[in-house]
Amino acid sequence: MADLQEIVDDLEAEIRRPISVEDRRWRLLAHSVQPDEADAVRRSSILTRETSPDVVAWLDGLGLRRARDLVDVPRNDELGMIRRGCLPIRHGDVLLGFLWVIVGEQPLTASERAGLARGGEEVAANLWARHRAADERLRRTRAASPVFESRQWLTSRQISAAIFTVDSRKRSSVSVTVPSVEFSIGTTPNSVC
Picture 1 (cartoon, helix red, strand yellow):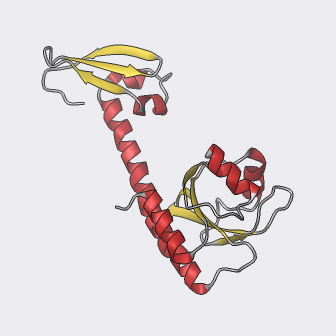
Picture 2: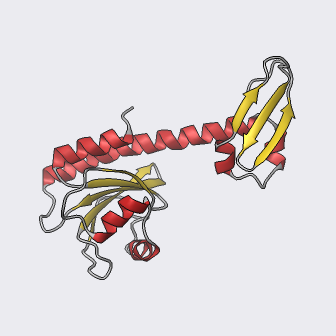
Picture 3: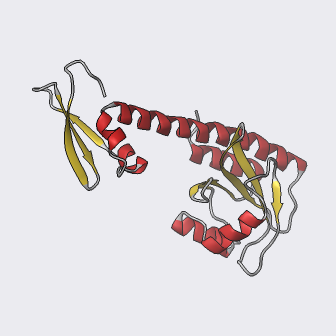
């Protein structure tokens, strides 16, 4: 499977317009090269890797989370945002994120729209694989010990960041280091984390 950045770069090379991908919480995951005519919203998104709350509120008002096809997002001078296209990225009914293209004054051609649709399918496959991999890591981590099920104060981000260390001399001890938390779990000799 292609890397998300490769998909974005290939799509930008094909349609010759700035491209970016955000997750469903409007956080930047990948973006293409930056042309000189970038607007304030794109620059801010690239620098902070997220979308400002006022822009999110406006985008939510456009119904992008419910959309199924490429949406023409109009210019918003108050926010400093030029015209864009937004393709919600889905796996079935699951919203995974958004593929953005800067449109500006030149409308998208039919071939550019077709390229965005193809690119959107690749992005969807990539984001779904990431989503599944994160779910699997969380499942394996929780299966490592009932301690994780009873410790609701551990967030999924902390669990995903956990570092497991097996003491090869004891084979019945696993140390788990979670940011700001450390404890040991006894295991059976044949268990695998």
